[in-house]
Image (cartoon, rainbow, N blue to C red):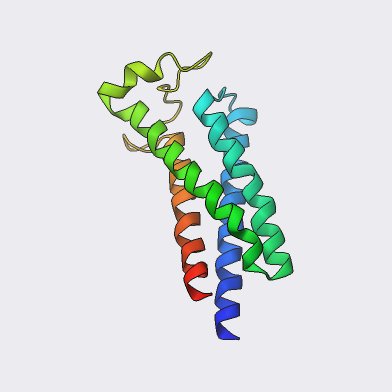
Length: 139
């Protein structure tokens, strides 16, 4: 029973993390007016369903139905890391300039010299992946 309670707590943390990430992306685009680039749209496509997937798993208390969340967040993590590298690695910045209507190397925010929007998304995806793996290992 104790293991089930821990998994439920981890599911709640994952669901909260995905919800905060979705609300954060909407805040940046709808409130601050930052137009998402193509890589940002891909990350949104991968993050938004996680709120429903993990919310459903939490309500049903069934971690087995959350496997698609691990897959989506794993892909999202890779996209976020690549997007962050496009912004921060000089050799990749040129490739990000031709990404679309909004260049993918655009940094709308840059807190402390390294925290950009892809960094925030990547952090959310990494947290979700790690916590989901912990749930998975516990059975």
